[in-house]
Image (cartoon, rainbow, N blue to C red; front, side, top):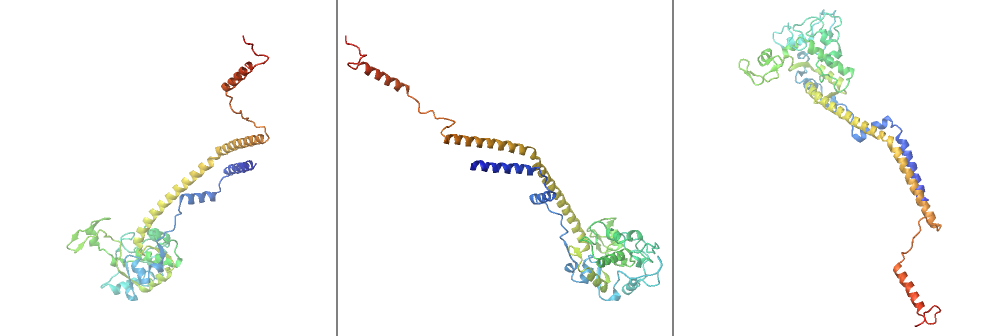
Amino acid sequence: MRKSSSFMCVLVVLLAGGAEAQRPLPSETISLFGLVAFGAQGVDAWANCQKFSDIYADGRELIEVMWGGAFTYQPNETKGYSLWWFEGGTAGNADGTLNPNDVAAASLIAGYTPPNTCGLSYFHKDFPGPESDSNFSECYPWHANACCQQETTATTTKLRNSYGPGYEWDRCGPLSHACESFFVMEACFYECEVNTGFYRKYTDDQYNFCCQGWNCNTGTYNATLNYTCTGNENQWQLHAMPIKASFADSWYRACAEDYFCGTGDYFSCATDYHSEQARLAALAAERVANMTSALAALAYIQSLQDWVIPVAVVGAILLLVLCGFTIFLICKEKSGEPVFKSLGDPVDKTNSVNSTVSKTSASLGRPGHPGGLKAV
């Protein structure tokens, strides 16, 4: 009976398992199955991000490293440019207050006169002039005389995204308002300030000799200029423009707890950004493939319910019948009425015949036997 009881337990488990197979798995189980069994990984935040205070030691490092040598840290406030100031007046009309950067330029550049052309060439205008659009408010200090225009400086979002993916200042996530305001000021200064052209990294002569549009040659020497082309010549890059130390230090304090990327160089960080985006895209594709495989495997497992239960039931019934028949045979054997009886030892017919003949011969030859034959 113990075997029969054990079998019944097995049968109950089989039937219960079959019924459970019909129950759809909850969505969280599917997710866990996909993540654990197939090792899918989520797309993580950019691991290349660090706090400003961990990247830069102070305002000097921030202003000199972030922009690839475009700016220098100037402790002498009279010899440094300001990335922001406050200017009133109606749209397109100066309020009579001089641009402080004109004053700085006059103390730094011999024979200085305010430039009548815009020295940088990217989104810049060819000639500086007023922006009379009343909506010119993002970079309003330059509204009376600007090398930028409303179209390229209309909003913070426009300034942030102007140079395409990888060149946004919030590549490591949203910045605090205090920190972001300094990036807005720098963007306005670069786009609008008329004095930046004095600090071009490459002169027009160098650019015109080495480049045809965006294609620049490498290694060509110009004796007149005493210059060898590097292949990097352009009309937009600044070099060593002195910035007031007070502005740089304020920028550092405002952003100390915010996050930026790489070694802190804004431009190399853009390269890192693109390679990181490619890595994350590949990781996302791998995750989709893993999840697709997981869902396919799950669908296959759930499809088994169409034949697993019938097979399990039939097998259980057959085992039950076999078990019952075995118990019946054992019971009949113990009661002395076995279903299958033994046939005993086989009879040797030759010996049996010889024995009979011997007995007959002995009986006939015995004297005085009533059936004995008389001697002739």
